[in-house]
Length: 142
Image (cartoon, rainbow, N blue to C red):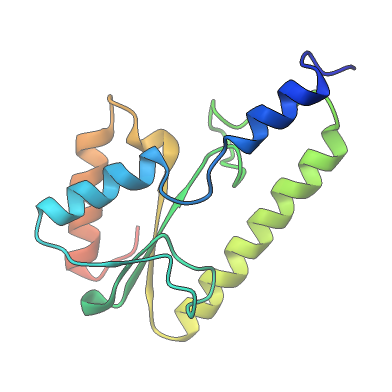
């Protein structure tokens, strides 16, 4: 099946996708800051370069895009119909890297919290952010 966009349009669209400072990330950061949490961003010397690190709570927060990290059962995770094998491989590599980073952080006694992009939609935003705060303070990972 051919792509619905020209090569130039597809290239432009893909170039606009950010890996850092995404809208879901900024939403979570604003919430945490407003609740008095202080954090570091994209810490390079921790496995997986967590999106948000709360050193005081020894907690690493990853904010995953449902498509890019293969959120099973999510309406935002659909495999493209073009270059399907390449996309399946790409997303499965991301998933494997996520698991390796989580295992390495757990080994170093870090708490890992994962926020999915779909959990930050209007219908569930408040509930999920309150749960995040609870998980940070309680010591229990979801």
